Length: 205
Image (cartoon, rainbow, N blue to C red):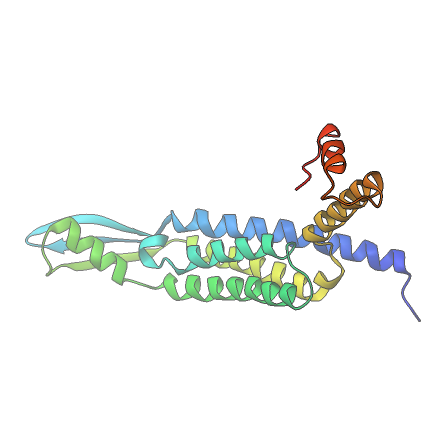
């Protein structure tokens, strides 16, 4: 049983809206999470103790970088067609998957806390105790999941989505057709045709 074309178009439009919302929200979540505290602890050394924290960007800059790549790919999906769209959609999906992996790997990271402790105490021989981790790495992974979903939607339905370039090309062809219709079959190199073009406000070149 074949699917009604109107039903297919409706599903494609819904997938388009879901991909845009999912991709934009996912990138935003990852970028916001990168600026939040992922790890906390107490730096002990030299007879003193100081509380230290590590943000997501200090733990790993990879999730943020991949989120920006994914956001760029989300926009580029509508600027290309055919094989190019498949490639860009794949980049979008891989950016989401990479963001998830980087966030989960960074959840238990303590190297950023060690660096923060050494900087805070001003000595290299520092121990970090009472280490704890916040839930922000999980939010970052959730953002990566949204990016991944946007990429999978683009891979599944992207062939049916419109492209920005097609609209511009169509407009350009129509404008050239109108100019050609007004100009008739005259030789554009003839002086009288050039003056007529200038009178119409057109660039004869």
